[in-house]
Image (cartoon, rainbow, N blue to C red):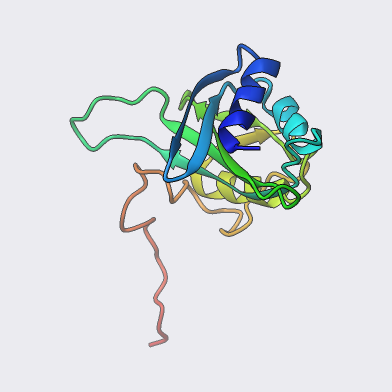
Length: 168
């Protein structure tokens, strides 16, 4: 099945959930509302014609503009890349997330177990909450780390450090 047809199947089965779609560099993508994300992902994994059995990764994009630029709506997109080992097709799903003090999407760790790790990494680096993740805590940075280093408003020089890297 062509990946464009997979996006159309999502659109048919969940008519109000797909807000955009397209294809670029040979990869099809769809933009989804977040509320039924887990249900859509379960359909993609379990439908015999689609069978997205391999969640490649989950990441995010921070669309915060440079100083003086127009404010984006929404600020973040959570991006899901998935592949069917059985059929050989792949798609990308994007879920817009507002920066309203509580940026969240539903966890898909109940669909793919590996999503738990991907969601933890995205949480750790972007601060996006994955509601329903059974172990949402930092995975790369120390627990007491402040901020989210892949956000565009994070200081380029990083947090202020008060240690000396070399003994005197």
